[in-house]
Length: 283
Image (cartoon, rainbow, N blue to C red; front, side, top):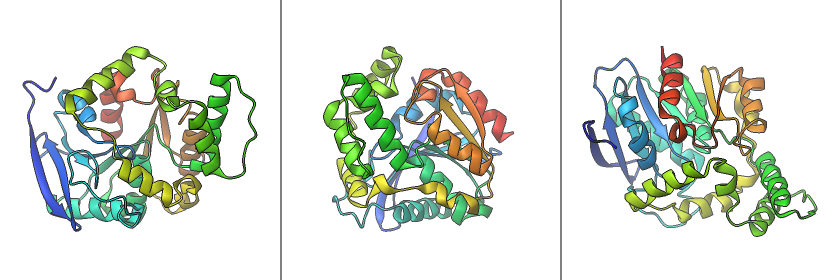
């Protein structure tokens, strides 16, 4: 899919870990985007789908620490924290000599994009949150309710969000896949890209973040400190994000919400429309 469109691969030790990232687009572009994938995933699929649609921008496709083509790390909770990911991102900005950029965070990546903007407001011109996950206790409730509905089971809603999440996945192991893809062809498309890349999710990152009590994270508590403009792009059929998670960004951040008729991966299902939304906010 990237035939005729160029990108350059880089491997660099930053903040004490070896990170892999790719860069496309002109160096003198008006805007630089940095793509931040979901927890334990990688940037390959986003680059594969969006490369030709974002050629007017400088785009950095980052495989976050321990994920994708970046060097593997042990499942040590101290290595996988929000602070570590933010420090990696700042080290990347300094390495690339960027005065400012636009973080584009997908799912859990939205937390990293927003937190970076909170800590470094003068180095971020805008934030794009795609299918954001920001309130994880609420997300665990949504997952359990969805699993109960799909399996036609009656369940007791635990007060502990980690217990809710564990029960949800015990009821339906493929729960996220079912919820992500109302359109089966989109799931097959992503599976094809993942197979082509030979990259698989980082269990180390996921396990470490869960050990670090990820399911208790209520990131909207930090929203009052964020002053950067935020665009939220979500799929109207992605129940993991819309409307509960996106409501937090609209109500507390005044984020502009753009809905697409997609599931959890709007850029995968309608790349031209997704690129058009990005262009609108970046202008």
